[in-house]
Image (tube, rainbow over the protein chains, first blue to last red):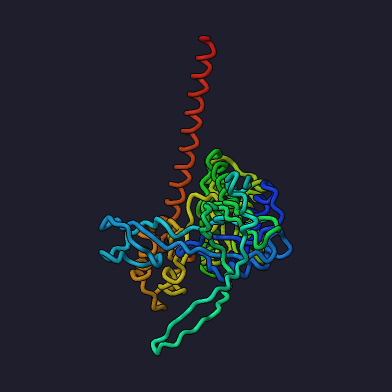
Length: 113
Length: 313
């Protein structure tokens, strides 16, 4: 359940931002989670509900933006979509793939009062 | 003036213009048989979006849901959730580099033989390399006790309910340990093939240990860990004659996930493969030591240059 640590990381960033910008209450949060990151959005949503309780972001609406996996196939030198870390290149079947996107775990923005 | 996007006079109707998120409106339909209906559709929107009402709200839409209420602000954050951990990890990494230490992070499922491998590694290295061990477990100091029994310095970190070590815990552990320059730092993570993959501790390499009693499809089932590691040790190979474990298949699966993964076959209890492993460790220790020496040499040179410059002024 490292989603708990991630949720605590989210709260920390939210609190730091609130302090710096004088925000009173956070009502919405948007997170970018890559399809190839080690995060299960449902588990993270559950942990966020627990962690944000009683904070300035209590009951904030959390939206996940899924970032699709992308890679660079070293064999056929092309940009390819990547569904899972162990998938071969859909063009040439090679496993020599460098992941270029989809491992993100970021807070994009928030809505506050 | 609008405090959100800075738009000026004439566009200050944002508050007055604010809309509720219910948009009742009616449609007129004419059906194929010629009858005409009129429906009222209240639409409920529970998501945020930008409305084009002749105003460009940019990235900070005026989200006031009714006139007179204070406006909400959209705040750009664009920060990694694990950014704090990365900062601690970078501090650890810098500390290791300054002191010429070679740190590795041993990760695996529980029972793969990490501690046995460590005990055997320490026994064989003897006093040839100064080393410390940081042991991560949810509870007990059993593992640190086993390491200390070899005479090596060990520190137990109990994560409580936590499923992984993080860079902050390692930073504190490093403060408590007496680390000689050019040491080998062995970090044994919590037995868990999932969570520790996401947490950089500042180590030079993650080393994943997979025992042949676990099944060759583990790299596909837990790809994150095998993707994060630089070396896979296939442990307990002395048991292979008793098992249906397909070694080439396992390696093939692991390299599907991570084409650059190095692989070693080893038995910590019988000793096969231990020499290759110890050579790998010693090479790492030597490389870290050389890097420290080179940076000291570069600094000394720079200081000498500055002193010359000062003397000639």
